[in-house]
Image (tube, rainbow, N blue to C red):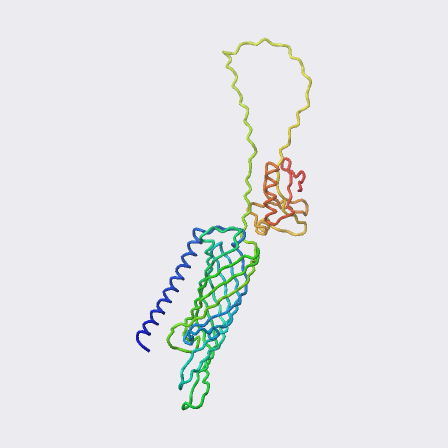
Length: 379
């Protein structure tokens, strides 16, 4: 092999490794930046599981890649299964399992005849990938967004079984096949970029191109010019969103009752400055019945009640994710669980709406008169 060709191969390998390292650094840096500064949780995207499948062509690159325009020489089919978790609007992680068929071929000139040496095989692998949503980095997430650009980088392990049929000649007259086949396994580094389209609230479509760099030169059973073989995968997939996402209940603002000014008691005049007042006959006035003063009312929201089961307030609070204290009232065998203490009905209605958003749809308002349960208000 000429020296200038070897130098060209060396610089091509060096350039490929530099591009891979820079890609990894950019993805990791952008993920850290988004996680630290640009992460704004939204009910529709973060804290969701993602389950999907994909199918598409894969492309083998190695020592048996001829570089011909005939795509069937290094083209085959692959499929994958992914399970993901969206940590925030920008950063996520996923388990990616891939199964792929491998094809390759190279032409050899033997005894003046052009002979094709084919490669066939199968690969199974899995990886743990980090997913960076570029659309939510450069623009804060909106629930109306239906198009997302994302990148992936990960680390995985794969095993493959490939067969390479090498044409051997006996004295230039007898043609025989000399198959070389074996099983190997090695680490792989997948780096990809893709687009995701939101078809519905729980259904997505995606197109992703992933570069799988194998930490081995035995993907094609041939150790020659390339140090690392690889295969690329163009995946067309569908996925489902599972879970309700992150939800924050609206805050309940407590409104204290208006303060009443205390009457000011004037000091009596000293005896030296007080003038005598003549006594007047007192007329006995009719006795008036005492005025009925309105009784102070308070309001709470009852969330549930049990007569045959015993639960603690901490269990009820964790079960419904209630962001305030839960208290219990007992009447015989009946245990009622309530939240809040509001001075007016408007505050109580707002508190009931918060409980309904947490999933307690049959919550209702209880009115207390001087601390005693008086009646209920249902809407």
